[in-house]
Image 1 (tube, helix red, strand yellow):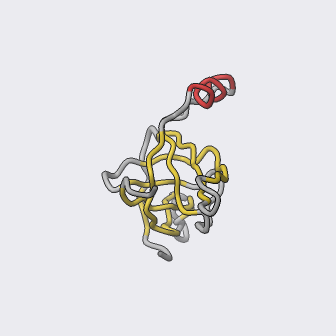
Image 2 (image 1 turned 60 degrees about the vertical axis):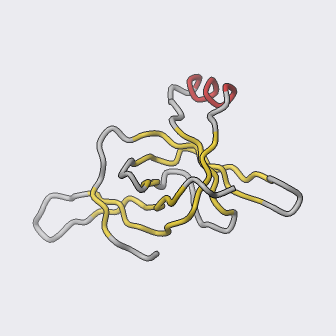
Length: 115
């Protein structure tokens, strides 16, 4: 179920030092295995109705602490904003969270945090 690779979940933080311009960077919160999913037509058209575009959908383990507006960074360096988090039941005893992702136009710097 989570056999597509590793994704690092991050939060956007301000790395401001005294007297300098504020700079935003991603701070790592967790690195987890994920499974890539297909973006369904329903999800794609609902996103277009809200003037957004869902670029990727992934599933992560249920017990991961992830919320909307966090960020996902993949092993190849691609960065996405998490637009929606849905809880899904895969089998009777298997639960997961499905993340709808929007590709970033400009990447952020990444600072090491808790993993």
